[in-house]
Length: 326
Image 1 (tube, rainbow, N blue to C red):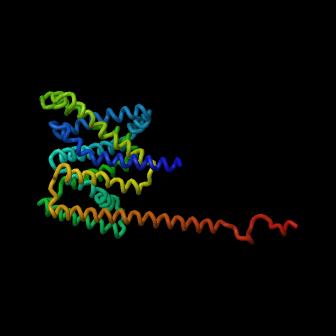
Image 2: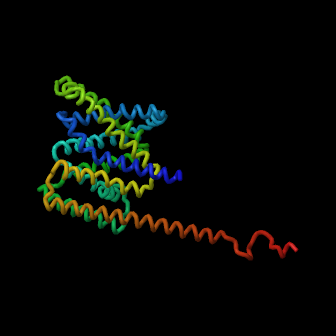
Image 3: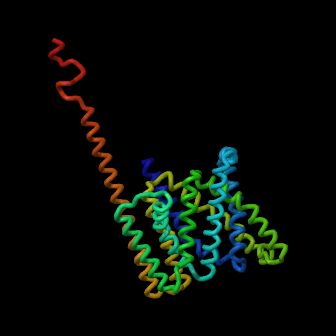
């Protein structure tokens, strides 16, 4: 019963995490008239405050000394911080400038970009279905480029920046909360310096648009940290395959908001491009489940063979038979 409750809690946490990430386009327009860079700077500054409080409550500080003594790891954290800055900043700008659908496409194609980077950078080998999925995604980009009149730069930049961020995070090998604390610590001084400069220029909205606006800017830290905490709770309770499926909730919600709430246009060629992306993701998901089933079946077969080899036959029993004891 305890295991079932743990899985249920993990599933709800995962849905909550990806659901919040999917609904976040509703949040950034509330921070206007602040510009995208000011919003980004507040997100960096207040995120460090939120994760700092969380680490204080959890009493998880020992990793800081270990990280400081590892210059290579610190360098990777700095790279991760720089890449996620590009990702966050472009996403905020996209949402506030009528590109929610295109931004959602970036997170739809992110798994495909991650696979492509694995082949190019890590020399990983793909299964045939994965090659078909990658080829389909390339066709989707070409169709969308035709529809937009240019490559979907917002989608591609979001996808490649987040895939790069994921790759660096894999090499850093830190938990989500601790990693976010380290990254926001790197970003804190530049972000705070920008906000102070903006205030000195008289262009900051934090103090000029009222207490409610200031509170909303400060809440960007909670909006950043809350889904990450929920994701961490899900990651230790549900299978990776389940998390892999849940990750599509965020771009699905963003896509729906772009069409139904923000009323962005979807001409036929854009629908065709998205359809190809969804086909590629369907192929990837099917291939992943098939591979998991095959691996599980092979493991069970090997276990059965090993058990059969270890089971003694009647004539080879190590203990004497009742007859021999007479």
